[in-house]
Image (cartoon, rainbow, N blue to C red; front, side, top):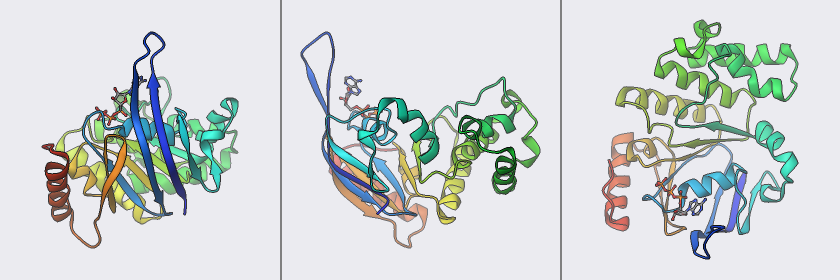
Amino acid sequence: MLLQVNHLQKIFQTRFSKEKTTALQDVAFGVDKGEYIAIMGESGSGKTTLLNILATLEKPTSGSVILNDQDITKIKENQLAVYRREHLGFIFQDFNLLDTLSVRDNIFLPLVLGRQKTAIMEQRLAQLAPKLNIADLLNKQPFELSGGQKQRVAIARALITQPELVLADEPTAALDFKNSEALLSLLESINQAGQTILMVTHSAMAAAHAKRVLFIKDGRIFHQLYRADREVPAFMQEISLTMTNILGTEVQ
Ligand SMILES: Nc1ncnc2c1ncn2[C@@H]1O[C@H](COP(=O)(O)OP(=O)(O)OP(=O)(O)O)[C@@H](O)[C@H]1O
């Protein structure tokens, strides 16, 4: 198993008041290499908190996150940036491209920080660029790109380090229907090529592209659905029904 999450609990306590919020009560699940998992739940159910802990951006109150036999909640503060760069890929809502760098340099950024050789960087980009249809964009600046092109560049940057796990946080939240569809089919094909993906989303349509959906409620995983060999629309219908019936939430 690639990732094993055990008895994860997160209690927030603000500095100024004694009030405690339990964001995660007891979350446990495992992810095999090559899986594509979506995590759904209503607002405030703990999705972002869970993703932040998996991303090593936040420490749990208790519990463990084992990625490739290492408990990543125990990594020392001064080693976290290197760990993230070497083992994890991130795809966020706003894509976070730096306008002062060319597209090529934006994609190379994690490798430059990790001091990879130029030849290796060029070789990996040469493999990725045609797959993501960005080969003609490499010398442009991010502000010259369309929204869809920016997404594909951000995906290239997430994949260039060949991460064990890609974490996506609401990747379609800021996109229109057409760009969402394009992004989701790209993520699907990246997964088919062997990349493990874990995505947090509000959208039943986005979740329906995953192979398995975990539903989180009140800080616990309480249900899961497998896509099996179903097409996206059929799976989406079951996801929406599950959200409505079990969570009592309407989803878009
Ligand atoms: N830094 C923090 N300090 C205190 N409470 C927090 C903090 N971060 C999150 N919480 C609380 O933890 C709970 C879970 O929040 P979280 O952001 O994980 O939910 P979510 O499912 O991602 O919600 P949304 O879908 O609205 O983004 C909420 O009650 C929230 O108010």
